[in-house]
Amino acid sequence: MELIINLIVGGIIGWLASLVMKTGNQMGVIANVVVGIIGSGLGAWAFSLVGLAAYGALGRVIMGVVGAALLIALLRGLGVYK
Image 1 (tube, rainbow, N blue to C red):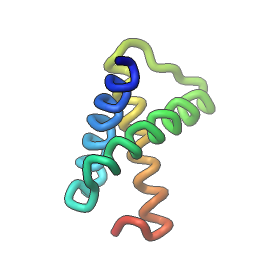
Image 2 (image 1 turned 30 degrees about the vertical axis):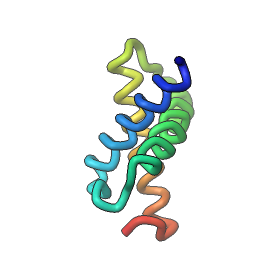
Image 3 (image 1 turned 180 degrees about the vertical axis):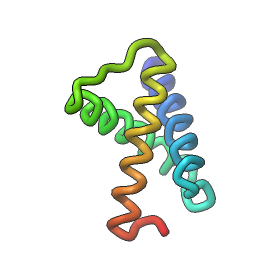
């Protein structure tokens, strides 16, 4: 059950990040889930570097969206997304 919840939340985070970065038309459901899950880890790592922590569900979602947006920006730099 936890895996299903993680996939759903990862998909929502990836979808929100794709809206922020304006790549929604290029990304599918699988890409949203992957970017959301990996981006959440990246966001947690980046926040910890500057000494920040996310508290509560909303804080974790915001941290995940920021991390996923960073991942999309990184992928844009590599030429994966236009």
